[in-house]
Length: 95
Image (cartoon, rainbow, N blue to C red):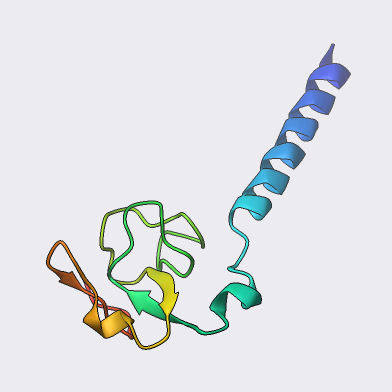
């Protein structure tokens, strides 16, 4: 019984690790061609990558308009974006 429990635990841990790596994969380079990183406009869990401390990558922002998470937007459009009063920025926002 102990051996089967250990086997199931290890299999579950491996499956969880693989799922985590697949979910947190960086944004593919081809999606960034012709695009720029626009900080402060992503909704909770909808960022493309780099959501800062306490998060890993895509889909990990913890709140709407998190200043250190970004979305890929067409080049030249970020600073003109206004999402519910939140302006897009080319650099991460503090706070």
